[in-house]
Image (cartoon, rainbow, N blue to C red; front, side):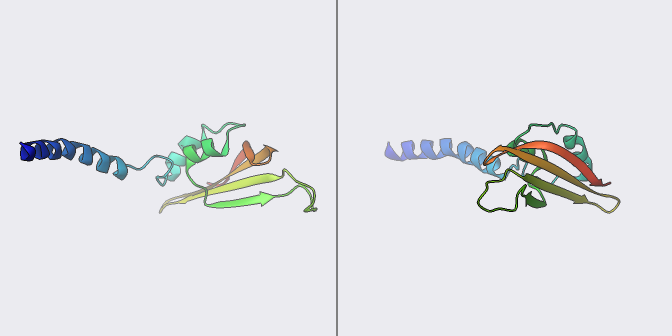
Length: 119
């Protein structure tokens, strides 16, 4: 009786293990590398006021980042601007998109503007 129970449990676990394994193998859109055409399409959905997380879900991780301060004093907290640069290249074309964020308070960044640098 005990062996039958163990056998039934193992049989029931196989579909569950297959499902978990296939879920791990899937890559979310934000983790996948976008092509230039996909990036151009997704960039059309950029809006002022989007958060850093929303942009990362839309375009993925940036290729480069930069933080620019509004003041020269380390004692004065500066809101400044945060810039994310995305770059794509293929055999036939290349493109770069810069997204600029402003801070309304420390650690909270929102899209202020964006610009295609190369097409």
